[in-house]
Length: 158
Image: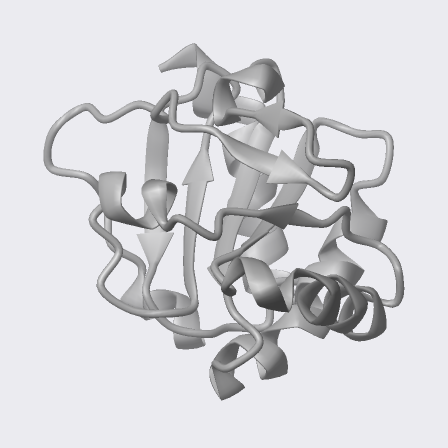
């Protein structure tokens, strides 16, 4: 499974937190707003070179599942003063495929006990954490898409 070999699976049942983050218009969201879809939540920042390398594959992944059962949510942890820079960088890196979300107060990374960037967490349709990767991978690879297809197919049935 290549880079996916580093996936970590929760040892206890864990669900998406209610912590909020904002979109490009300043509207507040939480991961619970997206129940019913498998979520690939990527916590990133413009000052993180591995995050920058990984982002194009997340954009391609989002395009592969456009209008489907999966949503990629890339949440920037950049400072509030760097919002415009982060927004432009995400658009550039993802080819415009990803919506901009921002958590300048780092509430979500803190609640999720994220110790480094990038960190990607996969949630099933009920908001249950399935796995997390505290590293980079090619999210549009055959292995990653196979894993995500399995979560779509079986995740909410467990």
